[in-house]
Image 1: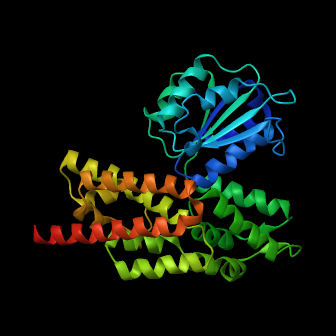
Image 2: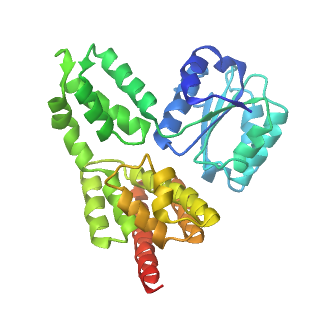
Image 3: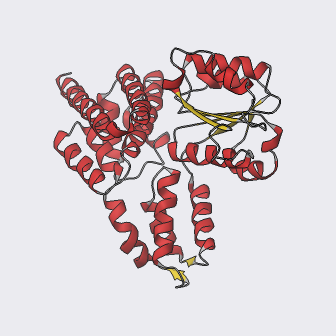
Length: 351
């Protein structure tokens, strides 16, 4: 596997994409996964308007047809020229893993396979196959760090000929979330508001991004961790009313449980207290959320954390497969985890 790190992707997309025929884009940042997969598709030279040249599949298309991916990759375009087979899935489907195994050993000479996957763990699913293959270009997509977020702000504001004051930048960084598409949308909204005005100051960020930050997915995630049903109902209703994508709550919730999993494992292995783990692995957590995470470490066990993380990841895939039902699927899962959290707290209180 040839791994394209986050800071290398722009250069890779401009100069090296044509060197590969198989691409794997994966990670917990669903927005960034979609965005970078779209960049690769656009750079492939295959027209998105040609349904015979660009074939889009998801995991439901592959069930019951294990040879579908390999057949599509090996088929000639109806009117000649190369094809792009763009597959969306979790990345753990056996049919997709088997197809990648076959194709990575004998990559197509002209057609292109682009796999857009979820947060696949190291050594599992399509990552396991890709890691052993030199013919696969892998693009991991993790939540933007401060450097990447600053670059995103600079990129969008430069397009509008705008500058931003240091205080405004700090406020904007605080307001933006962990999903690339959502963050880009918020920055563009701010840039549109200030188009032709030259500079963005802190009050402009408060005026435009203030409402979006108030409807934060963090409120819903905190309610889940605290086992607070009423708070979850209120936070979820705000997110839906604001037209904020519901999958952002699921994605944020998954990240929190993955972090809890790492922290709880460290806590158990070294027989330390939650407060000590927070001082090491939890240093980057916002100070307002530190007490919530510390309480969660006291009440959740490693086994229960891993179980709920798996349920959340499965639900994220289900919302992608059944988008008309996304809100109800997400709410059902979040309420279930919240009730489980309440039971965990009650059990911990009796110990």
